[in-house]
Length: 371
Ligand code: CP3
Image 1 (spheres, rainbow, N blue to C red):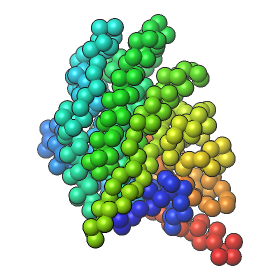
Image 2 (cartoon, rainbow, N blue to C red; image 1 turned 90 degrees about the vertical axis):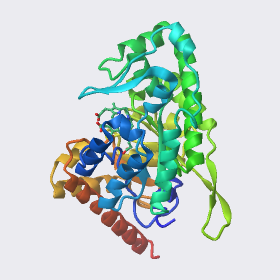
Image 3 (cartoon, protein in one colour; image 1 turned 180 degrees about the vertical axis):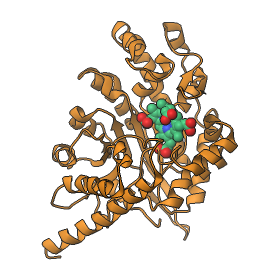
């Protein structure tokens, strides 16, 4: 592979710079994305057309020397494949035609076959791998069982999560049953992505942070652990000379608002923990950095500022990692998805700053230790 800095950082191996990619790096802030989406007809049609999904996956990499590609898809494809009827109402975000609100609906839930109902995702993964041709690694992903359950019960986004929390507190048995089925669906879905060529996997637990302490561990992290335990995190890769070697597929768990639970998350069996912007990287490193790599964590809204301010904040984040071994085990990212209102020039400033400053940090570190 030409650039495996991202994979090495996830395994906490030394790297020549701090790798960077951005959550939602292919999206509406890019005019070329909007053009392809228009050609596809809709966001969902774009997700379901492997060639077009491949095209938008590569768009941010054409603009910037990002260190990883992420499959273009959505976390809600899994509940869609479970028969809930996903649609996007204009300007309103995702919705389900048939939300899961009662015992009968929970009983009807079944684990889909990812190579049948989600075939288009697997075709997307293999198409993207071919198109990348080893340029950078490809990240596969899924929502966490809890985050998927939030959308499945609420029927869409929510301000207060009243429906899903009502089910959790009134009928924890139903909630557990739903999470168990969803966790098995997520496990099979990620394993199929690994088989199709995903080189790392990330679990997005966007709504873990709405849970009280204790319930987070039971209803969100417990099912993430169950997913991780069922993943085949090794794959066979055939080198150009025909030889076959086994490589590790690192896993990343990102709980938005999960800063209080870093030790628990780091003990879940993942290789890396994603951090939102409320956490100090150096403190996170002190708490769990000897066990896992860390990914994050610039506030996405910093990209609304000007180039020099973005650069200063990027450097602050890189410096907060601390000595020794500056940046070893760090993957730079935003603390959440990039906003659709981001000027693309801001990303230029950010990627440039992270690459050049992190190279300089390593040079200084090597000089200080007399190497
Ligand atoms: O990171 C990437 O570039 C890969 C693509 C990706 C998308 N969604 C594309 C997308 C990924 C990894 C996701 C994950 C996702 N989807 C999450 C978890 C991460 C997070 O942001 O918290 C969640 C909660 C969803 C569900 C979802 N999908 C919502 C709430 C929305 C609407 C919000 C919005 O920005 O409009 C989507 C739609 C969506 N998913 C878009 C994109 C590019 C915008 C749709 C469009 O083009 O109209």
